[in-house]
Length: 383
Image (cartoon, rainbow, N blue to C red; front, side, top):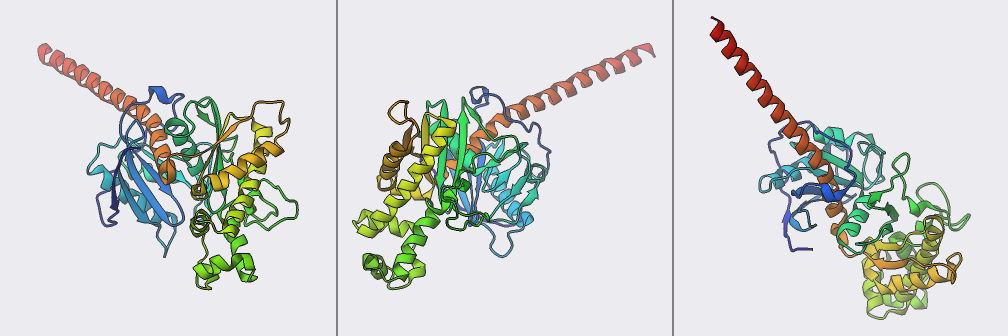
């Protein structure tokens, strides 16, 4: 990735040009998409990140704004998105906007059906934003956009069948086959984190028990560390001392940092998370048979402390092991910008449609002008 200028987004009053979007479905191939700059938006529970991305996946400029805390109503978050896009448009010729939302997006990629960290419930995000911006808008799940970015520019380049696992607060995922994101009939494929791996296990916020993300995610990592610290376990003395007894301060990045420094308990916790990761990946391999698993999200920063145990567990639990080709497991390369870069690149697929439609409108207008000019001349000559 190229270097970029990092800005803090000034959220204030700005102009809001209106032009309805043209073209809402992605093109069949990224190879024929126009090589034009587009904006990618990554929306999470704590931040909204926007960036201008060129056709090679390079970030030309990036802005950040906090997700409004006082009111996460759809209108307030949409206002933030519009302000960021308009700010970037002051300095860049933007042709389309792609949005990666942390939630379920319908098959038409218009409505956010449900977002756990925002008050979006069946929200027509694409239509609302396209009515306020001067470019076409595309909406997709953030794991889908991250997977697309890794396939186009990162760890998944050259792979025909790729599955991405994003390890953060929970577990998200996406499936790509032959250059197409597989979204399922209703648009919500890839919710791997809610596969049941332990019947009757830990309660999950989704309402079920024993979901995969309760055993291999940032939340699982922190929960286990805090439980050991709260029990005053001898193995937890290092992390207890590190947080000066404030157990609530224990976080995932802290555990990773201590593990890199050799803390035995933190190393063991990451191994446990990695082993559960490998079990889930083996299940997905049995169902989907991809050539590559790309591991992204914040927890993947632990690198081989996590992915090494995952590879070992994958080999132990893979159905037909020893008698079948094995998918390789790699860490994502694009980091926290993957969702933003992928959203921008997907938006280029509707930018082509927009440009063609715009050209047709111009050509139609010119034909009408020629027709009326000839008609006027004919009338004048007949007088």
